[in-house]
Length: 287
Image (cartoon, rainbow, N blue to C red; front, side, top):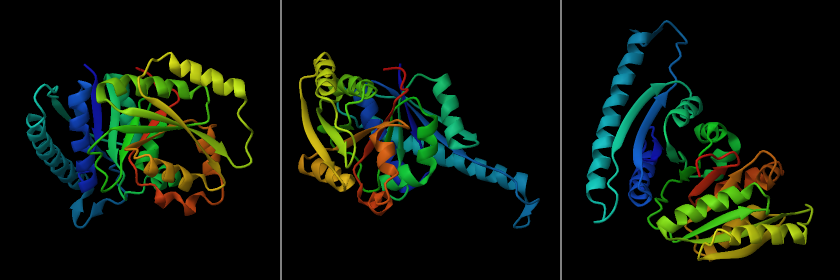
């Protein structure tokens, strides 16, 4: 059975993300791996009068206790899922080392469907752009990463918006969304992204993309356009106006998102994004 990997640092927002994962696991027929890691590197021989190896052991024991407590709370949530839901099992794991490398190792060992984590400050663009544990995970992941901003627990999932420039690589993301969309029962909106000063997408490329999407036979797909100089506010406005519950972006070092991030005004706009975001890697496997 497939699994959802839930990353936690025991913060309130990480707990919120874990609660989202329980609901999704019930509908996606997946089990849960609850995972925590920390980087423990001795910088000095003693810290606060306590030898560093002993201090590390204390922290490790405390984290394991927190992990077990969180597992028990989530198991209570599982028991409250609606009748007919899948009741996911929860397996807790604890490790040391960088989060990205530990996640990469778990993905190689486990049949993971999705990674779920919280955005520490609630500003998703900030984490994607400026470097964080989220960026580290995205760089190492070949599975979709769901990022839950502070205060946005994804209580409903009725409409999903995918931002694309009709690149062929984005078709894998559409395929994935149509597959889980049948289980989660959401509508899919595909927004075509046009960057200011960028090349126009040829008509035959647009047509080919839409014809390929049509082959997935998903019952509820619509198309929108978003372009201009201030693209992030435009994209956010469309998501708000169309009552989207989730924004989906494809992670690709050469696509529209990477080009947008290089624009000088991007960092001034990143704090405006608070919608939950699903990052789908171009090299995604297991769909």
